[in-house]
Length: 518
Ligand SMILES: *[C@@H]1O[C@H](CO)[C@@H](O)[C@H](O)[C@H]1NC(C)=O
Ligand SMILES: *[C@@H]1O[C@H](CO)[C@@H](O)[C@H](O)[C@H]1NC(C)=O
Ligand SMILES: *[C@@H]1O[C@H](CO)[C@@H](O)[C@H](O)[C@H]1NC(C)=O
Ligand SMILES: *[C@@H]1O[C@H](CO)[C@@H](O)[C@H](O)[C@H]1NC(C)=O
Image (tube, rainbow, N blue to C red; front, side, top):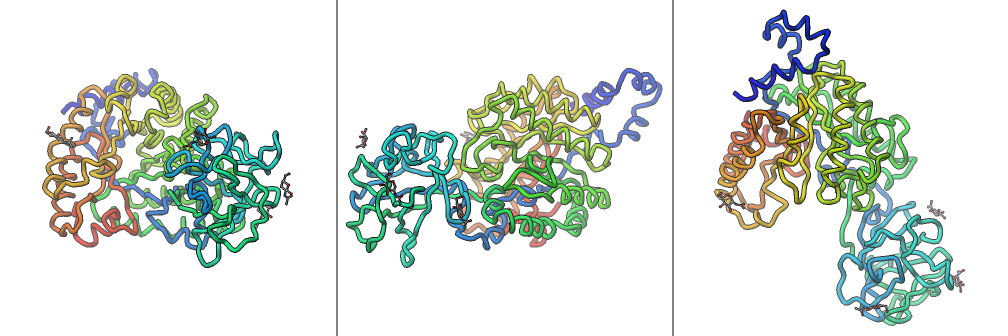
């Protein structure tokens, strides 16, 4: 097959000229014995270890249980409706000027994203990314959203009514409370000591419009003292040696391990992150070695967040990765560090440079720049590890990385296939979902699978859908169809994920309950 013909060329090209001389006198079979990791017909059947070294609250909600004041974590989106004027607080023009209270419905400009300073003190980020604060350049009591670097003038407390948590007052840094004087004038000069009635201009009805539950939220939520204990407990219990035993005895030969950029500065990562995830990754590598499992390291969270989701450890939904050369260089250093550390471990199979960068926020030009440098960083330490490049989410051509990746030996394109996250799946029946795999996904996969291009990897998929009330047999057929189609990906596939409180998202549960058999 096409893969067979391209692999020996790869094997040769990555050796130095000096080695090449020797290699030429050996046969290819000897070569593949010596460099067994490069096997043309082999495809990984992998599982992701999601929610382990990069937190995702929906995978293990209990991790957040003991956070004090846990409704107010970083990135929580709050909306405030004034009880006196009956309208929402709004950063006029999305930010950069005054705060008003004249909007009848709430959306982007009316949503304030929290930065948590501690369990009682917060900063509010507006749509255009400025922070709400006192108008220190003016009269000192008007509320504005002009600061790009929040300080003490941007710190607020949220005081909830004890018997109705949706009614709140907002205490400004000068000790006074916000009040709505008119629809166009919001000031910090109320005593805030009334009866919480509908005639009190300091009272707002608060709506929680969105939450993030990622690594930033859990560590900053617990704070410096408790976070290290909680995270160490999580890392040492969520994935253990027995899991490697389980997967290797159930037909899974590789793990894709999401990691965050802070792992490279273990044991003292920048706050709020805490040290210890590197030790957990070391353990994974030794268990992998013991059970003959291959490891794909996956940089799931890059500094600044490449997609604004909690799974890339975004603080407040912003996507800021890749905007400066320094940020890209910092990310390359993380890849360099990880590859150097595990290059000699026989289980290291591949390094994924970044997971799911989001278009258009991450431009193809910036991404290409990073992928080139990241590829070189891997090759500096390993000639055999595959280098995986994730396609962009959002509007992007699925073959856009081909010009770059085709020139790189041992490159792999990662594509994620979920029958979710798009309205087209909302009303699909069981059979329509299965047909979609057999027809549409199959076509999509064919489009990115070429004889001289990069290998293809369905690095995330799951036997879950929008169908409600489906039977076990329905799920079995759905999983089987996906296994069959994704089995044609030339690098392999990886289920999302091994363990999850949502049963169908847990490969462990799916195997133990007979939904999936490999
Ligand atoms: C809200 O007030 C601002 C400031 O006066 C004004 O520019 C804007 O047009 C008002 N918006 C609405 C919907 O009334
Ligand atoms: C929270 O932070 C504010 C501002 O730094 C500080 O005044 C306050 O004492 C802190 N509260 C707690 C509970 O640490
Ligand atoms: C908040 O600032 C306003 C204006 O400077 C002032 O009138 C008010 O007394 C301040 N509140 C406190 C508690 O300092
Ligand atoms: C799936 O493929 C079929 C056949 O090519 C096409 O008619 C259909 O529109 C596709 N469905 C979606 C949701 O893209």
